[in-house]
Length: 461
Image 1 (cartoon, rainbow, N blue to C red):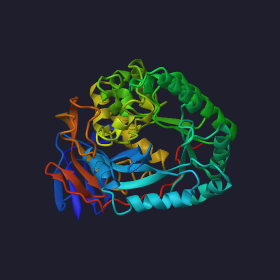
Image 2: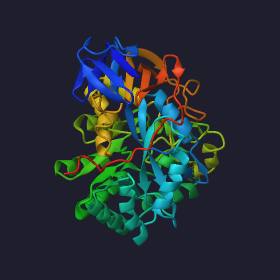
Image 3: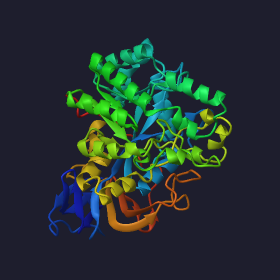
């Protein structure tokens, strides 16, 4: 079946241009001047709309175990919500438990996801148990299409790795061409601060932010960068939230080191003021790193413009307020960490375009094209070009919408952006040529999505 998308402005990293797009089966067969393509079996009128490559959310946690519970979006509900928001690919984290192997972990995540996703998906591997066996398995993971490995400088006793363990994994990553992704917070110091706060009777959710100061994110980021420099490994800092961490990344990039970083919409729009909301409402905003003072936001927007921040992902990890976030009543340390957002990333970053923080090209770059290149999916994904997968979003830049738990499709009982009025809205979404979202609603299937065996980081020197 062929589909013609006509009359729209096609977006790329270079900006917008008037063009039509012809889809044949699962791929784009041609991009041409208006009126030069077709006829087709079906036509989508994109007059007055943007036509952009489907979003790639390179940081999600579907069905993730955490603190005796698990994130409430399944791969089915989470990828359906992603599609509603114009994201056509997710890369989720397979979580190695202590004492288990990387390959058995990959098998477990395939069991969860395969045949249960509305859009295409890939995996990163969380390495929480560094030993001779897991280091050897890293090559097998790369062979299985998983070439990125996340480690933690936070969460002692759960995911935490020592500097020595990080060094060993980085040496292996350098050898096999893989990328190390780092949760960079000084977890040892943070746990001491959190214990002191609790002992002093400070138990409210805002303490989560106050005991994870931005200086300890900056310190850990700097330390990770130095370890990467010593080993020669490429480094990708996940969910960067603080000006101090951004300064360390910018310096390393200026010096030519293969250091990359992402931020998330919550750090651009929310703040520690949300964590401080009364009546335990602040627990809805508990995530790590925590929400910062608003003063950090201008630096993050600037980092996106200068490419010191290369990618915007969500760190989507939803826990319901009732029964899950409430596990931390009386002890902020027990609040499950995570904020829902996979459905709203493209819209929220479009607000950056509306506000003059980003260009149209940079919107597409940070949300689609760069993550495709960073994680070995380009040009199959991340671009509207002949031969690429027909992952396409028709976006109405003038539409108005209000974000709310009443209208979102994520499987969580609150919205972190409740009542936020925004400009722009997804109108139609194609995943590999199939219309999965249209003005009539969702028409996709949770058996549609395919696993993506990824190549290595395409930015490496």
